[in-house]
Length: 366
Image (cartoon, rainbow, N blue to C red; front, side, top):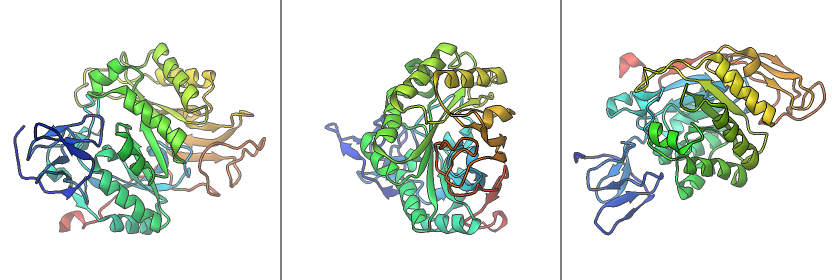
């Protein structure tokens, strides 16, 4: 790896090795670096005998999205969220669908910039109920995400993490202490898949999911992108569902989403809609209360049903809410059973819009 001059803010999850290298302790990759080297994530590197974060205050762009796009179906439904990412990633997914940002090795990908306070102020001004760290994994911009979450909470704005959950225990605890909601990308349920297609391990991800359930009040949901021939068998889906039921219970929503050919897996077919429906059926029949399909047209598979009486309590058409049959605290209007999630009165009405925004300056003024 070529050495280069880095510029960044100091971080604290690292330690010296006997051979003079420094080991980054943020995620289970444990990158071991000489002066001037970067970790696999590319945004954390060794400078002046410490590990620094090079993307603090910089973003690949901001966009106001529906919260359902994260996807989070049970966290303030219908509301908008100010979404952004940076560059780089600590996984090496061959199927990455945001590869232009997560796999970037060019800092000019970071086209916008904003301080934590500016992001919180922008979210409040735009009427967004939450700020989401997404597009690439927020684990790698740990310090920036935490400062943003703190600034958001001062203004009554929620913090949402969309993550693969590949993080070490100590930084994980500090990170999720600041989060209100999360979507964890449970990419598959075999070590073979994780090693072959993501260059990582399944075990630490499962540890993060258990941690969120056992040790935090963070509302979280799980997403699995089903790739034909790789992680879409009945046996693997059943094993995954069984693990979820045994470790985090039946209230955690599971999203099964469609793969489209991208990045280094252009030769794979799209996920058939029937595969998503089959996965959803396996989950529901096993006892998962809330199972969804995504990246496809499927009103039934994207709607929420009361687990007690079976009534449709939230209708969805893609990210647009079409029906709402819950009271202000989330109880089914048909039978009174509480729907699991975070509800705050009436649903939002943001719909399926996406609205790119510039925080540093308008594109023509930069």
